[in-house]
Image: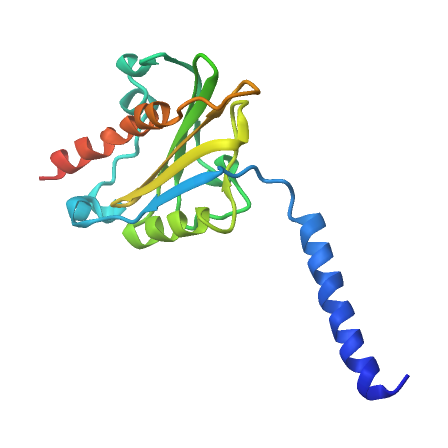
Length: 197
């Protein structure tokens, strides 16, 4: 085989081998079928850095008794992580000091809400962007990720992720009400904005 043919063939073989290794080693990180990402905005300028909002979030602040039920959803497990990597899959969150997560289940649906405490709005925006392409949050409750919806929002130095999916096979339920209910847990950040005024 002539050298001018062998070299391009070897290069193609190397690329295919690399792609195969990447596919085999990247893991099967579940991702939502539909994902919406929102960067931070001027509304959260007062808490754009952790220096301006230094007190860590507490589980009692985020997951209050009033949020034990969100409509037809009932809260299951709630957790707090000081290593944000424990709540993520296939993505890093540099500067993240805590993540709080709760799971919810209802009739034919389940979901989870996670809030991350990052260093500033740039880090929050970077995490939201990474969730859209590199990895996602770890799935902490059982639902069909292939029939799920999620939303990630950067709000100042925080990122919230709401993710909901169907738990039964067959017809897909309307996940929008579940996602809206989970996303409402992010109102805790607006309380931080008010406290910073």
